[in-house]
Image (cartoon, rainbow, N blue to C red; front, side, top):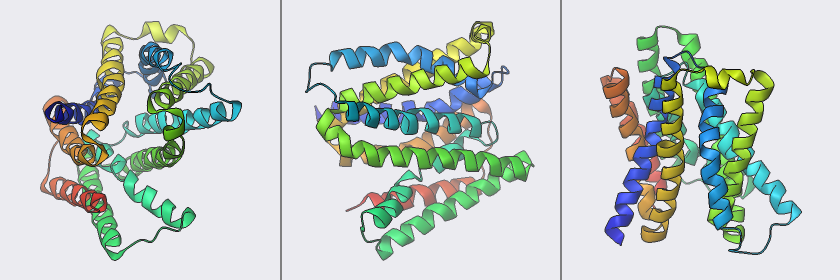
Length: 292
């Protein structure tokens, strides 16, 4: 069982890493962020509704306050974080995007210190310095490759906003998942995000644009929904059940490395020494923070 749990954890990390690659591939066909996100969520929605249906009788019915909390979690963690991430990927490499998203533990630590009065040790400060120093090196690589400092900075800010939104989601999620159940929280919050993404598209774009997209875009959106959204979420839940959160956290370090390699193989993104050093600093910093 433990061996299978490790396999699930690794596959989940690889699946999440693959999302940025699929987004960048879809952008080559001229699709915009709003349309691509709506397609991804349209393909994902049936899976999350089925997940919610299976979990409907697992615990007590949801109260009105519970629905409000789950709506907020869906807005922050699955809609806003995804939308800002999709926008940012227009301007930066997939490898840099994954490194910036990987900073979310530093944000959780800072907010825990501010709002929960948890102390920040010297070791944590050193780890945070490593993380943000590594991001600085990775940003320098993107500016050298892209040649447009303004666009790279904009992309970094958008993706960092995604990391902020996701960190807020994690803090709120931790408060309710034990009471409402992980499967139900994931199903409801994800379904909310799907509906918000589809609703945003209907407000901003004509509905005909969904069907007018090339078949390649539909195929990439479907792959994104199955292999970079639904399947990794299920694999992660199973890995947590089999080997625990601490062991699963170790495999998350594969995310930035996997995205960097996939970006090089499938997108032709260059890999430089500064980028490799930056990735090592970020992964090392997060690893230090993850240690007890």
